[in-house]
Image (cartoon, rainbow, N blue to C red):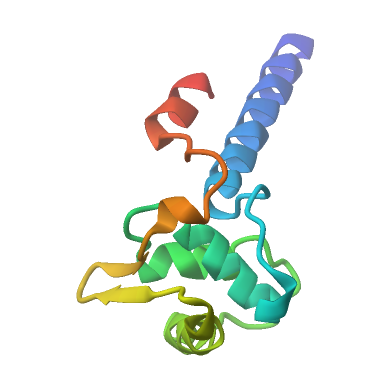
Length: 130
């Protein structure tokens, strides 16, 4: 019985680490967002997620917004991503930041390498180390 508990604890720790790594892909902590942009938390999360991928799907951005929320009484519609992106676009456009809609694919950030401080970790690397 103790062996089984040890195995389950180890597996639990491994899975927690994989989740942490995957969340870091969606919400990088090394992105510096200028204060003058006056972004709210949801907009900051979306911007950070856009810096990590060539194209971020609506589902990825939804996960970046709500994946870690345990306090939600009801599920939020995925279409809310569009309104957050629209507000983000309006706020960052005066600073030369362009968010591109890619029909049936998602969103991308023009010149995204300009905003990311470290290269994203490929998902296959995360999966192999878990």
